[in-house]
Image 1 (cartoon, rainbow, N blue to C red):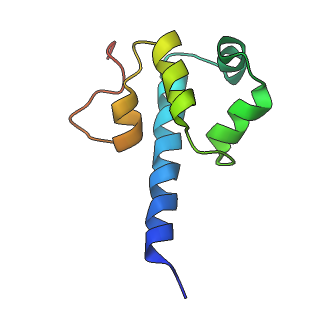
Image 2: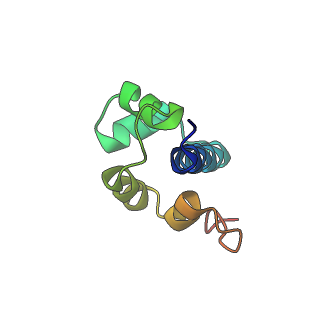
Length: 88
């Protein structure tokens, strides 16, 4: 039997990752750039962007700290009233 809540949660997480990828592409931030700034591995960044790991609170904090033009609320909620970066 299909768990609708699980499906919706998975769709939401996929949408969050897609918005994050969109922002990173727009700002020309590579996965390696993130790994270096976050003092982690490219493998970990790949897991976040590919769906192996959720976008954790710690990951969001580091995004805010190192890339203050990224609108974390838009990435997480997808609220169309929010622009995805302050530069756009």
